[in-house]
Length: 487
Image (cartoon, rainbow, N blue to C red; front, side, top):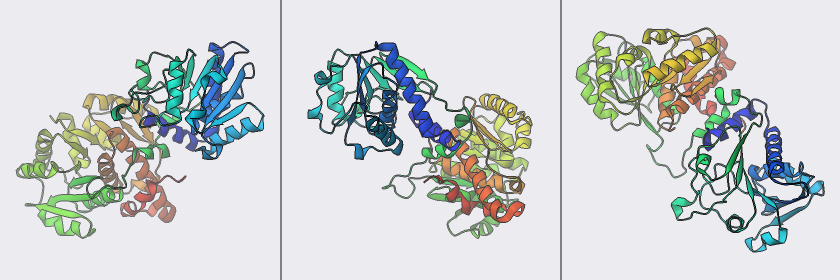
């Protein structure tokens, strides 16, 4: 099963791997043509009803492979309003090939009896569409549902939410969607199709496994920032760190800001607060007494954490026994989302917590936590997946290939370079993970995207400084790393 959002990410990742949308559309169109052949006899009249997006483009491709039928391809809307270049190419190919085509811009122009089809291909709207059906799609759907004609839908019946199986406009008082007899969906089954009274076929269209396994530019689709959002809407992060070290919490906090968090606060021992504040005026520093974290500080930290979207716990805290006791006590009393890094990681395996944790160990720290590793990233991915399942938390295991798993799903990041062995790059990653975990619903997705973008920021720094890059070179390169190069 794959959600519509994840499918869009995988499509874009496939394109980044060199498997173009054009190639995928050709494969999808062929799959639709096969479904038509299974349900119609040579000489039957087949009507393909196409929307103006890539869903319609799939059916336009199919039309070129159905010469044993009497076909007509109907475009809902004017050709100049087709939304994607690849769909427009395929419409032009139909017109240029002198295959029967027609356009309907007004629902009053649509008369199903005029076409008299033996089978209809519904390719009006695909996955990712929200809201109730509009005209002319609404009228077409009503007339298809009222007619005694079999309907094959492309990817998902128009008007159906691929993730829930419910009509996309159900929340607005509408329940209109195409009642398909069969659905040809692509790559993997969609959650919402299981509840439909339709024959569902899953077609392999040539998307490589790597498009799902490796994090890529498609994963950026998980990031959304509303135009009318206000301060705090895009994440508030609390970094708890410092004492023995000052640079680590400062790097994590700066990275969180550069990764899009609206507000970043640093809770640290009072003796190092001024030094941490000196790393940037954007940081909000909240000191506590003493020169290291201790159990007496936990109640106050829990109060502060309650108002935050995520907590980044560990950068620069050190490993004093009282500090580790405080970490365990904090986790026992916390039920929010937290990124755990550095010395604080060793507490996690024995922690009794309701918190939603993202743990960011390197392979040495993973071993101390009780996990296993391997030089081969594929073997390591299996071991990390198993250990994440045992822990019940998300793991981001740093290495030449970063492995991210929640025990059920696993992703691999392969950005970065040898210069990133310098100290502090893990603190940057922890801060970025905290910011993205405040903005992205899935902890796995947030961690995977953070690993990928951290490596990209490091690669950009290496272009300028080579192996002499410093961790402080990374935060200012994070915004570009979180931007799709194709945009």
